Amino acid sequence: MAGLSCAYHLKTDDYLLVERSDEPGGLSRSVKHEGFVFDHTGHLLHLRNPYTLQLIPKLLGDNLALHQRNAAIYSSHTYTAYPFQANTYGLPARVIKECVRGFVDAQLSARPAPKSSRPESLRSWVLRSFGKGFAKHFFFPYNQKLWTVTPDVLTAEWVAPFVPRPSVEEIVAGALGTQGKQFGYNASFYYPKEGGIQALAFAFAKEIKNIRLNTEATGIDLARKEVRLSTGEVIRYEHLVSTLPLAKFLQIASPLPKEIAALRKTLRWSSVYNINLGIGRSNLSERHWIYFPEKKYRFYRVGFPMNFAKTMTPRGCSSMYVEIAYVPGHPPNDRDAMRQSIAGLRDSGLLTAKDKIVTTKILHIPTAYVIYDKNRTSASRRILSYLESEKVHSIGRFGAWKYSYMEEAILEGKSTAERIMSSVIA
Image (cartoon, rainbow, N blue to C red; front, side, top):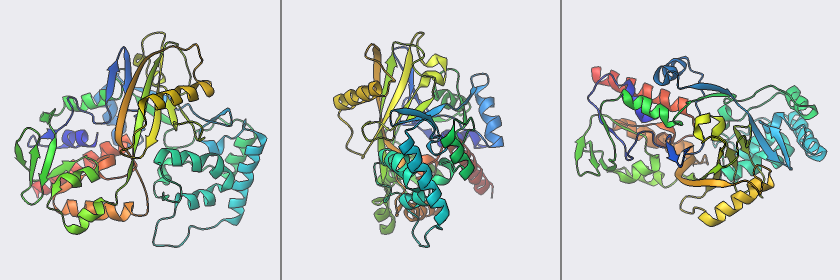
């Protein structure tokens, strides 16, 4: 989306957009499979910026719907509303007591963030912010499943936009009864009525003249300002915009200063194994997605595309995506992952023994989540600064090596195009 947005916002036709796949969209693609439409896990449009609130409806027209989030957490054999920290009512009394008492203790101690040149760890931040109970029953196990590393390894640099921090009153109210208040950046979202999330990529692509599909950048000569393509062509550039994963870009770029080449080896990420299921039963769940923090479930999240848009499934059916994170290069065994996932879905009550699985589609996301460890921020800043000095703009979730969402990618593409045009005019 960052690359498509950049091309869309360039006020010139003197560019070439190169896409490895046979369709535009990158990971924001949708796969049509036996009457179902599956995305590469959930890609939703959380729009708050005045510009994107005008741009996206302009691009998609009537093919856009607004949804109010219906998300839950499944733990202790109980479904509770998202976010966990504001909705513990219904959990076992022991769990609620541990969470509320731990939170109160953390607030009473009111420890400030540790003074250090290094970023605070996620473990430290969670204990300071929410206490031991919330850490034990949700934050620690869930984040370890998602990121594949412990809370000691993760920093808390990414949490501000993504982890809601309810007040004392709201956490207590959520322990005493259900509350209808929504929290978080994703309380509402937009999604295409037809075509899956890739409808947006196609809408951008309609407005872009110079797209080359089925073509991959195989080498980049930073000194000569040339890109070698899989077709054998060599393209000269004045400005180069890359949305490749930063580690991948550095792997095919040369010459690199020794420091930059060394920093590439410090970049870490997790991968996602995405099991998509078509189920021969309608109204399988009313929710949009559910988080699974407990270790006994192999997956960390399950989503329901048919609740994003009715056109995602044939009539009388439901669909779900099941997400399993893994260390890059070590994907789950297909048979084991499927068996464990089906068992977990039945254990949680999402599937019954009578449910017929009418189709399956496994999608791999080799680079899914950038791991925020102690090296990530300083390394990525130095790498990106160097690339900018070489007129290389590495942008988007993986190009800029960060945890972000689609609106941010679209706006980053726009701002990059504007910087390029201003430098060309100057």
